[in-house]
Image (cartoon, rainbow, N blue to C red; front, side, top):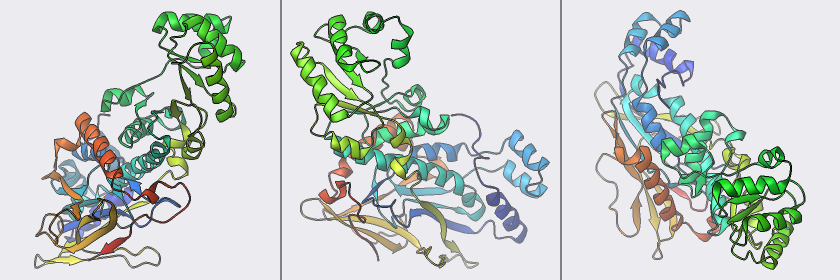
Length: 439
């Protein structure tokens, strides 16, 4: 996506800057932190996603003439503030967890250090990106874990808006999905794309056989034929007769999937199509995928459930000011103390404690000098640092953006999953699989 991201924000961010410029506090050096007070209900871990997208959005966060004219017309802020916005560029530093990392309650997922005015402007874009993408990735990771190595494709574009569809495909791929149906996600983020035909293609033709012959003529016998437009058993017989025993796969999109898949497998084998795979796509979520673990299913396609976070459409992250410099240039910790919304002030660093089997046992958050200060801990075989520099002077580290950033995040997530205790992958309701400790 191109163009300015400046108005993808909430009005109060601009009005805070307006007031702070008026009273002289706008340029105080400040530290904001994005974190989740809790995981979505019943989840045992979360997966960070959206970081690479966010870094690119921050670099494009500019107020061009069109945005400034609209703000002026609607008298959102004073002219002096409009002049300041016209020159706005984020020039601060960003640290955070790597994309694809597991996170837990209190994990300092992202810290932004800049002047108050520079940093507070980014609250909405930070949260809208991380909350949605991390929700999708966290749900997708659960689906991947119960798929037991069987491929999963993301196909939820028709169940969300056109922009979030691309972001969801990216997040699901980072979490271990193998492909997406969304072509823009393929172009923008380098994700493999897939797709053959819907029921409409079969209904277009006079007969199911004519539709299958047209598809095989176009794509070869290795294609995937959708066999449940009419009678499934007849569809299987027709598919093998048309494509031969080398038929690539059949897709089932309806019915009691465990029993239907078993019947289709028996029929394919009886017809000699022993190498033909079975993919299923009917309103799947992690629970249905787990229920299919014993069925002869070779791959899955997931739509609605993954793009809506499987019941948790937002990850619940918040963005809070946790430290600022006083008039003497010293850092002062600040924190909210509202009931049920307490935050922990201060500059932070974080590490994950591992046992002798390289299994995660504790999330440790060090309150002190922050990730760019003197290390509060020494990394070794038992402590893995979690925070990395993502932006310096307003410039994103290219290792975390674009196609390369997506590939790196996907690989990192796969490694991180190996560290989590086995209890993390239970689908039953539970608390965070490891505790978070502040030091």
